[in-house]
Structure formats: C-alpha cells, structure tokens
Amino acid sequence: MLKKLIITGSGIKSLSHLTKESEAAIEQAEFVLYLVNEPIMGQWIEKKAKKSESLDALYFSEELRPNAYKRIIGHIKNSFDLYNHVCVIVYGHPLILSNAIMGLIKEIDRNTIELSVLPAISAFDCLLSDLEIDPFTGCFSIEANEFINKKKSIDITNHLIIWQIGMIEDGYTFTKNNNCCAIELLKQELIVSYPSNHECILYEASIYPHVSPKKIKTTIESLDKTLISRITTLYIPPVLQEKIRGKY
Amino acid sequence: MNNMQIIESLAKNSAFNFIKISELIATLKNNLEDNHTIDHLHIRAQLSKSNQFPDAQADYTRNHPL
Image (cartoon, rainbow over all chains, first blue to last red):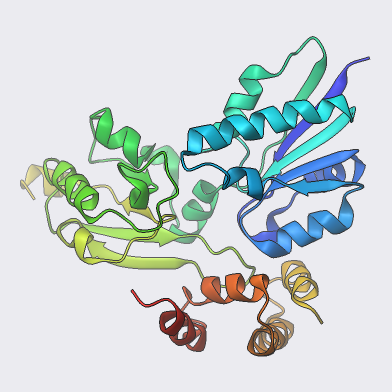
C-alpha cells in the first residue's frame, strides 16, 4: 500500500486563513512537519496534530538557503521511514515562492508515496484583496531576482507585482537588511519603462486577523528612500493608455 | 485568555462584530504589556507595522533602532 504525503499551506493571516481541508490533514496525519510565519500558528499545530515537529531549526541551520532546503527535503523524505501518513504545512500557498517544497515534489518517489498538494491563501491573494486589484485585466507578477537577472520585458499597461524586493542579490542567504544598491538597480531598471514620478505601493500583508496590512504609497524615483523589509512587495499600477499617448 | 485563544477568537469574528474585536484587541494589547515570550515579541513587531497600533510602533522602534 502506498504511503501518503499531503502538502498544504497555512495561508498568511495566522489561524484565519487555514482551510477546513488543511485542518483535517493536520489532525489526521500521523506526523506533521511545519514551517510557518508566526508562533501562534505553530502552537496551534502542536496542539491539534498527533505528532508534530517544526522545520525552523533546519531552515536556519545553514548559511546558504539552498543547503537548508536540501536538509529539509531529506528530513521530510526520511520521516517516511517511521510514518505512513505525513502532512507538511508551510505558510502561504505551498507552491508559491517555496523552493524547498518544489524540490521535495521533484524528489518524491511516486511508486511508494501518493502525493496531494492542497491549495492555500498566498500573499498574492492578500495583495489582490488589500489593493483591490483584478489581475485578469492584465498582470505580471515576478520575484525580484528573476526580474533583475533575467531582464524580463514589461508591459506598462499591466499591473506589475515584484516580490521580495528586500532580497535582491541576496536570494541565497538569511541576511537581515535590505540592500540599498540593489534597490537602486531595481529603480534604474523600472525607470527605463515607467515615468519616474509614477506612483507605486510598498506592501506587506497582515499576518494577524483584524490588523491592517502595511501599504506605503511612494513613487518609483523615491523607492530607495523608503525602508524596505525582506517581506516587502512592490506593486506598480498600470500606466493609463492616455498617458502613454501623451508620452506621460 | 492567552494569545493563541485571542488570535483564534479574532479569526472567528468578522469585521461586523467590531465590539467583540475591539475587546479582543484590547486584551491582546494587555497581554503584550505583561508578557516577554518569543510570541510576544513577534506579535508586537507585526502589530507595529499597522497604524492601528501606534504604541507598538514606538516600542518596536525603541528596541530595533534603524
């Protein structure tokens, strides 16, 4: 009989984003491994699961994140030596900006383990609601290092969402502070396409229910003058067609 | 109520129930005043990002100089 692995997400906003199916997976698994974004969620999992373990220690065990991801993947795979039904829960959506989970999915032996990935609320979903955006009118959403390194072309009539701008040129370590030079690089990249006084929003989703998200209005030229954390996202609204015709 | 019970209760109340939410937030703030565990520091740091909690902002800035 196949062993079973359920991978799910806890959402962003602590207990309020947890779905019924994720809750059931946590309660019914023999073993739950979790990597969540705030301590109350972790305490809740400890209380509800039959047996659980935080992946925090492994996540912070290596200076370079790819090495930490390898250790996490190895640990999850090894848990099947002891348990038949394992649930892995990470914050946000399990497959969004989650290298460890994507790596795990590639390495799972499908001949011995049956895998289910459950959907969950991501920071992207929070941003759409908090900024009142419909992405299907045209939206480009990308991680900051991907945007800078792969020189992605932009259509300025779309919504543009750039994730983890506090981690540019630092995709591999746990460095605490944002890199001001990297923000300057991002700014220069954006000014090629956008008017420098174009408004944008620095956004951070709220991780507790009934607490407001962080939304700071600024302009592209002022990006390097604002404090940016490692979880800040940059949202740039579309440039209106009339402005393009009038050359800004 | 401990912090987990408060967050659980906040999660179960919608914005329509604003009186209950205000009470819960006030209890949470009280807990944070007296409690110095890791979850206290984490919650306080998060609340400091919200304009709803100017006190937390001042406290966080004092403890985490830029």
